[in-house]
Length: 182
Length: 371
Image 1 (cartoon, rainbow over the protein chains, first blue to last red):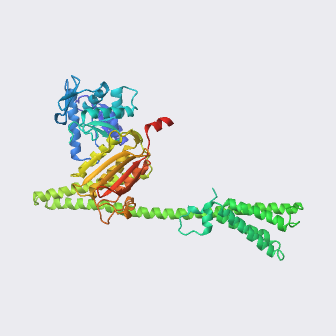
Image 2: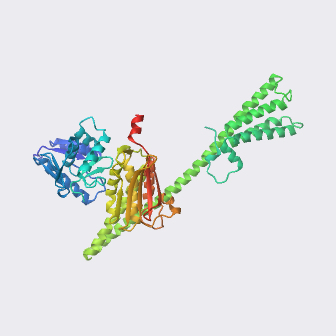
Image 3: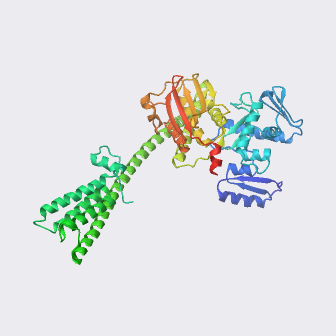
């Protein structure tokens, strides 16, 4: 066996026999192994994203691009997020939000919510995750508050809050920040 | 339960007897009438054959059990017991019982008649149940055959188109002009999409009909409807869309996935039946009963009043050979009803059809009040 860099491998397969066999095999090679039975379980285990069948090539490309962009964002020191062709600018270092060039004031909670969203462009963030990041642990069920904060943030950053383009609802799951709406 | 009522059977014609059944007194009237007949016959025959009276009263019990069930049979049993005692046991024309043997006779009659009535009522009920089960099974088999035929047709048509197009490309692909090749590839893309859509709808409908439990969560109606519209926007190219579901509507508890199954199919329906560029209006409000009322109105050809219920049936199309598999509106209605809502169609102010989707009032306050 040639020397392999020790790394972490995530196995995703719905067949438990395949998972067990691959886990034993690759653990023997010296890798740290995590296994998941589904895309959703893989996300929990730290995967960047997943697509479900049937999917189109356009969607696959968009997901890969989004994952790469997130990685870039993670690596930058003091990021400034620009969205909607510059209509929205979130300066995370200066804690400033500009809409169409002029600064808008967001409350602490509103800003926190927007910060979590823009740091994860094109990624579905669950209700529970958003509530935990914004209100802290123990508030995961406060859906009513989340809906209200989302609405308030939209009124400050969206051109038409009733037809939101930047912060979109992912039915039954959570919200997604779309930096380049069509 | 042994008791059985006539209105369980959905046959066409009903006599006056059956109407009395509905009131609940009919079976008892039958019991009384049968007992009276038995008494009359017994009195007529008593001069000749005295032993015939108990048999005639047993007959009345049988008739009552057959038509009315257990309780009317017990009524006939009681009436027969009293009549036998009063008219035929010594001393006659008195309820007095003269000796032990007569008493035992009467009690034996009572027990046998009650048993007889019970068995008869059970027999009748069992027969009715068997008939109903048979009819239901036959209807289910017919529905399954229809569904299978429609499903296989709707799955095979795009598959056939895809295979034929692939074959054409394989055989003559290199010699075809590039725009002809592009057209063939577009056919494959469109037919695959059609197949995917159909399978998605069929699976969703099967899931809902299997009795999926709605996942009720607190939602803002406006943003959900907006998100559903966004997902179906590519199909609605060029239509002038008026969106009026204000984000000021109160938060309501509903299942967003089920709402998408309903609303999404209404939008697909608009895409299939109205000309590109025509106006489309999506509006939402809370009605007087606190229900969420969503309206999808188009300017297409509309739906004649006579067809406004039929189009929600499975594999029904407004016109024979029309677009779609005839599954979309059936799914839309099933999805609406699965969370206690309703879906129907009216004429729209835009000149076409207006689909109205109502979701029950389930404000967050109602939940915290019961919690």
